[in-house]
Image 1 (cartoon, rainbow, N blue to C red):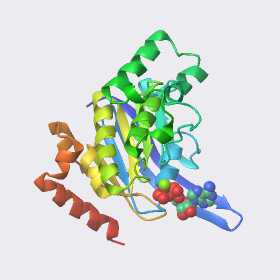
Image 2 (tube, helix red, strand yellow; image 1 turned 45 degrees about the horizontal axis):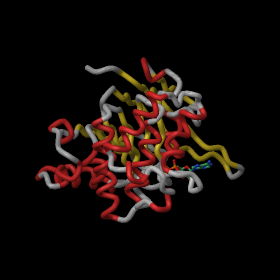
Image 3 (cartoon, rainbow, N blue to C red; image 1 turned 120 degrees about the vertical axis):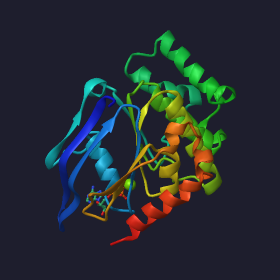
Image 4 (cartoon, protein in one colour; image 1 turned 90 degrees about the horizontal axis):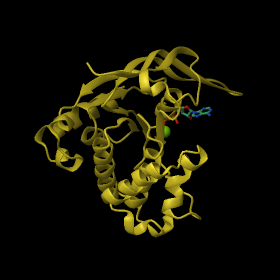
Length: 253
Ligand code: ADP
Ligand code: MG
């Protein structure tokens, strides 16, 4: 068994508003191991972003616990990638991806070489001095993940990072980001309501129920281990079998 990075135990959470209590997470238990790509799939509004915010300590559990283990306990152990890429429009791509190390006083020569190498390997060298608005949606997402990788996180959390893109760009961006995460040897947790995206990227999928949400079912997905790319996985015969099973799971009340 590979190294345990994150553990959620008996996790429950509600928002407290003037109108009353909104129970969102109900008694969740799961673990994330090094090298996994875990997708968390659930209906809109079920509590996926809330769960991610609990995992990254932006929210505090009411009951139960979230624990980071090993390397993932260190500062900058995780990186976050969101629906909006939050690139600064007034900076060029190079300045955008250097922001994390700059703020943390670790923009060393070695770090800059690492970033230049990432830009080169993922086709952005020619755009280094361009503003984000001059890049396509997919290129922006590649720049955003390189910015996230700049701090060398062990674990990446992705919250519906492709949902602002149209279908074609979305497929390509998911393919690119899946490859980058695999090549760089990172562990990833993706939340999405897109079943196809989850199957094409993940080694494991947790299917959530409606709010207050809990884990309804877990699937181990074999394709990623076979070294297939996300686009190739979509052409696999069993892709449809997993898709239908998860679809049914999500649409059962
Ligand atoms: P998802 O990401 O799955 O779409 P969220 O985690 O964003 O769902 O939200 C889960 C539920 O909690 C929704 O019903 C939402 O309206 C509610 N919610 C989210 N954030 C807050 C907040 N800050 N205060 C009160 N309710 C919230
Ligand atoms: Mg959300």
